[in-house]
Length: 65
Image (cartoon, rainbow, N blue to C red):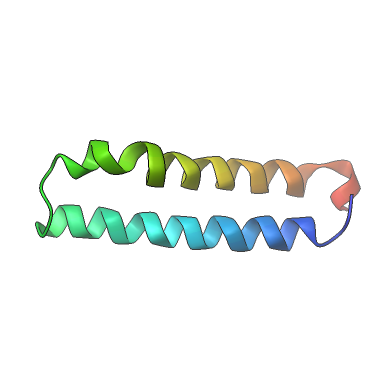
């Protein structure tokens, strides 16, 4: 496995998590209604969690070392 996969996954996960955090803050502060928790769930929060899990799996793979 190429060595660039861990940094690439980490960058994608970092961007996605920061993007999800913006959505959390917008919903928590009130500019958008509470229904946005469910609107954002499949397109924002699930991908962020999936990318973090993918990054951890890639980083723990034997070929990443």
